[in-house]
Length: 288
Image (cartoon, rainbow, N blue to C red; front, side):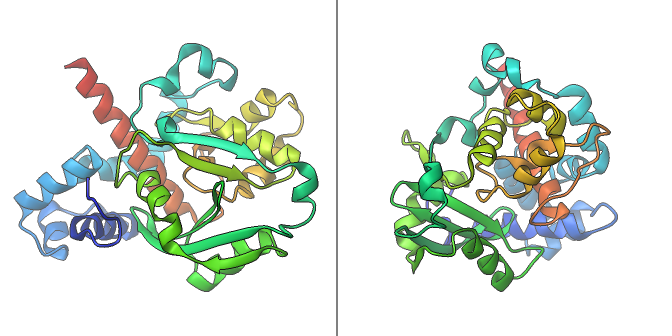
């Protein structure tokens, strides 16, 4: 993995490759994709497989809508049994590198008044990411690949309209490096959840879904003790301010359809594909 998320040449190549794959209606041949990246086919294949865990051809298979349906059929996890079966204890992804706490309901009602929120733009495997955080942890991640940087900024600022926003990417950089897998350290990435009590219950349930697995909105409703609140759960999932780390992309409809995604369905497909590929790679490695 690279030592610097912004300056890593290979990181930028992989980000562009994933974007190129995701924007094509038909699968890209290896030679054509490598040429777009300015590399030989053999070198690109090695580099891509090293980063993502599978070949470009296999990764493109993960981006199909059928992949979501297979996840629901093969890796559907009932949240009430997730912890008991230790499903989240084997992955190397961000599940193992998080700790979280939540703002009190009273403080949340103030709309961020008295709260200083630092922000900065970073590159991620899923396009430009706006990251926000307090001294207690990351409180917002928004992706701008399918929107605009202005719209993403306005969206997150509107969550806490009374907060004091300070541009300071260097303050956030260590957490971001770990969050996007550019640096693995024994320290956990702190997440500071700012939301209403019901929303936080939903977000905590999302964080119990193991990487590479999925669940449904109705299962989340059951897990938080509100089985009839499926619509409200869907709204809370959509209002998740910390994309990727609070994995709202792992929530699907019962049919296997992706449902909506606040930052665009292509980003959701990329998130699921990345996790599915890495999870399969790790499972195969463990069985060797």
